Structures are given as C-alpha cells and as structure tokens.
Length: 468
Image (cartoon, rainbow, N blue to C red; front, side, top):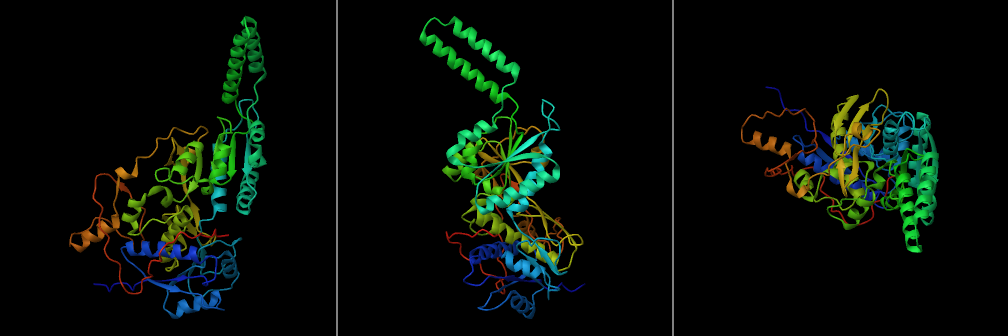
C-alpha cells in the first residue's frame, strides 16, 4: 500500500496594510479558504503579509522558507508586471492580475477577472451574431456606446481593437445623459422610400376624410403611431451595440435603442439580482435582452445556495462576489500549477479556465453568458447567444424553490461511512461548481482542518477597489 501524498501548502501573498488593494485581497483569501475547506483534499494555507519596506521578492522568499509549494498573488497589477519581467522565481506563482505581453518567468502564470478580457470575449461573440449582409445588401455595422471614465475607456479600446481585427465597421458614441434624444435619433432606423410614400399617402387620405378638428387630430395621431411602428420594425443602421457603461447608464440607453438591434456588454452592466433588490428589478426590465458576460458564481447562487456551497455568508456586492470567485478558482489552479502542469482546463466559479503554458502565461477565461429576460437574469449557451436572432429564453426558476447540494460533501460523507464512492476524485482537484438538485436536503460540510488554515476575514460594507 503506497504512502499518502504530502499535503499541499499554498501561500497567499497579501498587500501591505496601507494598500488600497488590501480589502480586495482579503475577499480573495476568503474565497480561497472556503474552496479549500470544501475540497476533498484541503491544502495547508499560509498568509504571507507584506511587512513595511518588504518587496514582493521578500514575500516569495518567506513563502519558500515556510515550506510553500505554490504562491497565490500578488493582486496589484504593478507588482505582477514586475514579476513578469523577472528572469526566474523561487517557486510556482499564480498571480491574480495580468501583465501585458507573453514574456514571463517559467514559474509564473496569471489568473484574473479583468473586464478587458471580458470585453474582448463579448465583442467576439457579438461579431459572430452579425448577419453577413443587411437586408439592403450592405455590410453590418456596430455602435460602441461608452462613458468617459477610465474603466469605460479601457473597455471601449478593447471593443475597437476586436472589431478592427474582425474587419467590422463601427462608430463610437460617447454617452451624454442630457442628450439621449439625440443619441436615439442617430441610431434609429430610417423609413424606406416605399414605406415613406405609403405612410404619406395613407395620411393624406385620412386627413381628407376628416370632417372636423377632432377627427383631424385623431388621424394625425394614428399616422404618427403607424410611423413609429414602421420605424421600430425597420432594420437599424447599426445591427449591434457594444456598451461600455455601468448598469444605470446602460438602462438609460437600452430603451433608446432600435428594436432589432442586438445589445451586448461586460459584467460592468450587470444590474444585480432582481430577486433581492428593487433597484436591480427595475434595471433588469430596462435592460431586457441585454447579453453580458459574468462570473458563474455571481448569477448561479442565492444566499442559501451560496452558504450551502461554501459554508460562508455570501459577499455583499457584485465586485466582492467576483473577487471571492477569483479566490475559489485560484485554489484549484494553484493546486495544479504546483505540479507544473503545462495544460490546465477547469470549469470554475469565474468561468471556464484554460492554460497552455507553452503558448502563454495567462489563464484564458471564458465567462458565463447571461441574458436579461422578463426582469430576470438567465444563463445562456454562448452558441445560442451568438445566433443572428436571440432565441427566446425562459427566466430561471426562483432559487428559493431549489436546494443546493455540495456534491463533494456527499462524497466525503459516503467515504466516512465506509461505503465505496462511485465519484472519481482526481488528485488535487478542487471544488466543482455545485449543481442544483430539486427536492433534496442539503448535505452538511465536514469541519475544516484546524491547523494552518487561513481564517476567514469578516466582510464589512467597505468599498472594494477595482483592480486596475
């Protein structure tokens, strides 16, 4: 009988206490710790704090001296850029941000939930959904609608780069909330010559039959309604809109866009959970048929399902949920990278992750595709979303009618009772996304090992900084 393998040790590299990224790193640590506790093979977790005046290299050396097999972090982009320019690192590292370019030391890989990567992915999906030609035989065009903030500008830049690479014509429309009517006029369809002539003739006939002012007013209103109906049904000058906007601004814009225009965005336009927020409910109705990218964790769990999955309270904001998801996936990626696997594929809480270290140090992430429908958020297959006409999507069932079961807990309990499990567990595998099983009782999570485990950091309603 072979001896059991040595327990994996993961070091989490924390920012200094005065860093604006400390709150974000703590939430990532919560996600890593929760996913580790739910794993069939929990790792030993170490928190490597940045002492005053210490460098990222000092932290890595401390991790090595503490016996770490792999390090997770740093989260600050500047620190990741510095690591990417190093000749070598003393142990395998999973950085929590991405540096530009493909140059990086052999021991470094980069995992992030950057909205820029989402923007490229959603823009490619939008391009796939475009028709080859419009009904008039012209090539399709895309409208890029953007705000003026730095993060909106970064998303816009990625949209433009992706559309140029695909050979798609586009125009950029800076958002001016005070001039929404002007934006609507610039984007709305124009009546065809035949429809315009038909409408004018019908209007003249109706007015000719009118016998008094009241009937003439009714005829004029009827003609205006018919004109609006024809315009709404006409092909717009832009077949798609890519939004680089917050959910609030996207809600203002969406109702001004033509009926036949497909609308796309990143997770920055996520309205929130309509089942728990009246503001999110209102925004969801405003954003009907918007397709956006998001971490599966954000849209897949309600509070009870999250607690059953992770034995922890659900984070308080969308940003915090994404950081928690990043930490959960970092645990699995770190476990595999500690073995220096050059090919890694994993369906996790931030999306479908894939690494080919022979080609790039960046872990590619395919986020979940979400469509807003009937005031709810529904997951949709990207193949279906990229059809020329968005298929009808039924809103998901109310999570309060479903029960989430932690499959790995069930496996643990089966093994503990001495019954052979039929679930095969890959060595080092982390928690898989939890399926929803109706009419089943939630399994209880076994207690996590008490020694050397990173304690959960209480979440407070403080601002979580965006990771640049």
